Length: 234
Image (cartoon, rainbow, N blue to C red):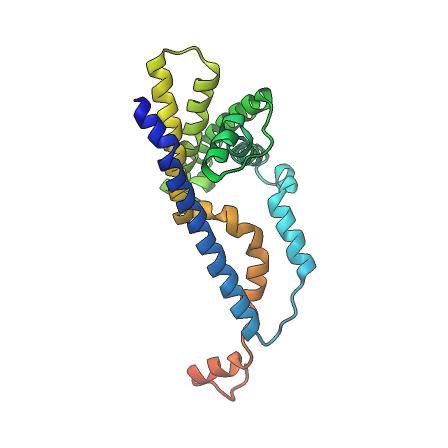
């Protein structure tokens, strides 16, 4: 078991981490390249950068949605995302693992705060799943992955909390730690190939959307020609 733990926390961690980084980098580069190409070909190059920036900030800090649209579900969603971001990056044990894998580390969260955020993430993740099941509108819009993703994301938090805070047998501790590491690495591998890529794409989505709607010059004439409507009143 110890050999498997060492392999999972060492070579396998580095492999899955770089798969995630390279996959997200590929998606980001392709999206930016497409946006630049669309902007270069656009006839109208004016973009309301202020509006795009405000919409992006509203998405990144969705305080208004808490009070106007499904407040409990929004609170669960925001809390879940806060835990997902802060705990994996700033937990002391994770910082040391990042340092071993990539050669440098950073400041870590106090253990009390890390434990609180872990419990918040677990409760919020369960609340998201229950909210999707309870709401007919959300059930209609949800796919299988919308239920499986929160469940998968909760697993590292549950197993990590067990390892850090509960008195368990050595065998249970090792099993929990192995599940903790492997589930995190599975998430790494899946991120570039699923909807979770929005963690990279969404901050740029408003700018890309505005650029994408800037059609190339004379495209209206080309459309009319294709439809055999050239010269006819619109």
